Image (cartoon, rainbow, N blue to C red):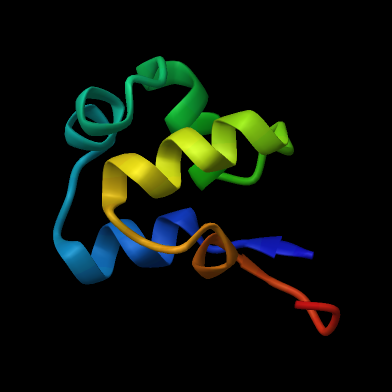
Length: 65
């Protein structure tokens, strides 16, 4: 499963700082998720989805979606 945060940020022209503020997620966490250094918890995905005003399933690519 691939997390698509970096692609979503680029398409919306958002910085790590902006996403952090919008979602209420620490900047370092947003950066690590976007750079695929960590796998986010489901509650973090939910916070990101709410902050970005997207469906939670838009944040990942999986054949089991």
